[in-house]
Image 1 (tube, rainbow, N blue to C red):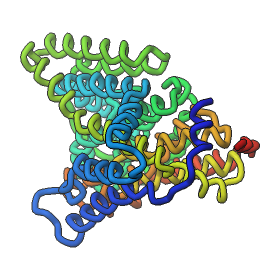
Image 2: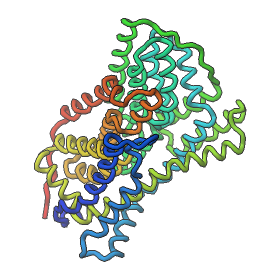
Image 3: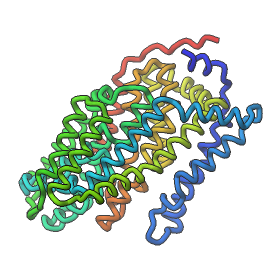
Image 4: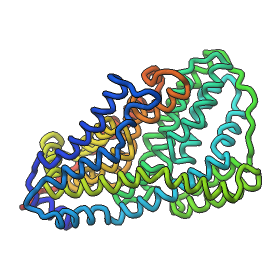
Length: 447
């Protein structure tokens, strides 16, 4: 185990964590300032300062540290981090997922699927129906923000026509979107969590489903009880095309049975192109343009992944990771403590960055070291990374999910928090699942 041998030679150095601290100051500090102190007209405060810019400055800071290493040696360290097999695979999947998302949206697949499901749900159960629809659409699309953008206008229309609570209807959509984002095989969070830990997506899915599904079922029961004691809603008529919706269900089925993600995405792209052309929602030119725009939409995530891989490599070389591990060793003491450490670290990074994928990419290499030290199975680490980042992202009022939903519904993001039933229930299940783990023995450190 070369990585463990290298780790033993590195001296803990808290100063090596300065780049990530600088990033938090730049990104979180400016975000709070422009969101709540001096709001920018027509712009979400946490998106005034580009996450790419903040990480670029943090990378410069990382290069300025450790004068014992030459500039060329630091470049080599970054290159090794970027060139990791899992990072390269992750970048390729991001491109494919972007093309899929672009063509699916342009073909009308998401709206048709949502409208089809909504048309068969009785009016009395429209609120639990919105949650269920958001779960399915997000699993198929692989994006919570995309799901929220598609379903929230429908939720607003339903709330208005049925005289229902608007924050409730929108809140259940956000919860369902986070459920699907957490479990989808083509979600960037799933890709990041599995590839950084070197595990198969199906193994992470099986681990995740044990806590996510019970949480979703309890949420659904709560919403059904609410529906039974409240008045029904007239949801109206919604147009849909079965042919446009069908590719999503095929992609969902292929993902669940464990087909390679590249094959699943390629099949999905082909099916949506065919469905779009047959139904007239797509032409050859618009197909190409939508796939291109979808891939372009992934560029920022890919650049952030490259920057974070570089920063993480330098911080690890300079003793930053070892400093975090030393702190966790003092507090954890066993496997259960190590898992709580991974969960807290991931949630904290998401609260700080307001981006669940970025949080995973930052926390992943440290989590991998923790897993080796405390003998935590990689599939459980991947599950914790994805689940804890999605919980935090689904609750923070300045995250893209709540901001987009609130903007569409013309309400405040804070008004949604009491109705985010699923993320809070999932949090309880995560804590319970870790608490129920058997405390394994810590691996001995041998000098």
